[in-house]
Length: 364
Image (cartoon, rainbow, N blue to C red; front, side, top):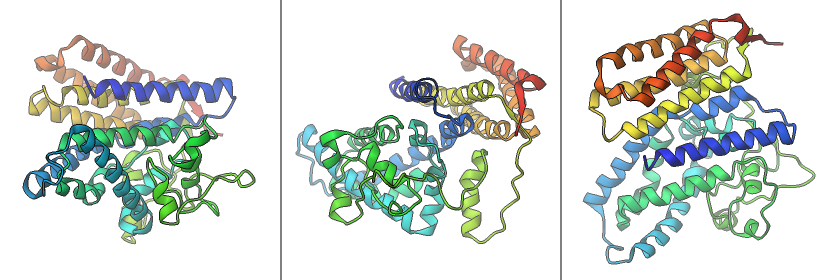
């Protein structure tokens, strides 16, 4: 439950921002992209985050030099906060400079709508490629629980810095990474390309010569030059690898119909809810059921991509996975929680509705 509440908070913040952007400021909100952002990493990225933490813990147990063992918890946290941010700067910078790492990170930069949901949009593999950059903390003796806590702080700051509402942050602009600084990082136009790699503190960019202010007379253009036109998270996460290897990319046909915004948004919420269930069940559920839930979340996220692109297989898959899990729930006691049964009822009702022509709109 400890990790479910922050995840729900992130979702609420995304929804509030989207409401303000659309209703108050009258900006266009690309709902398909917002749904993609929420589900781009999903349970698969969560699984690999567990691998990252497990590797960190193993290195700490076997190779720690114990330099900070006698330090107070506050001192350990403060040092870890600084070192984590330093390591993240180089992690981030290398993910822009090295092809195999860019194939992972590009998923995040593909989004061209700058909003909080973009802060959640990440590759399945981002935690795996992060592993080498943070091991220094394990070697000097930073405990695993401190590493996790510090990471949570930094990731929340980075999530906040993707918001599309805050223009300037006053005095914070001088020493913290702010939404303005990070907008620069997402720019694909000069002079913004490959700038502002910092996560929380802006000192690293200033120290290593990669800092760039947002200019009033040069609007930031978001996205990438070689954008992959897909809402399918499987292709979005894996096509960059095919491209890197020089393999011919499959032709991605433009959809003729899309789910209407309200139905698409609901599908995204239903898919994201599986991640919340997985986080909640990760410790207490039997291995079989936990693995089924993991697969359920991954398949749901992928079929939502199919729905978003108006693919028939997306509609069929979205219906079948919920039906299959509903059948499983009848025979597995752990699934017979009232909340889960309510969820399955809503998911099946939504899946049934996608077969109605009225829920689809023709793409102009």
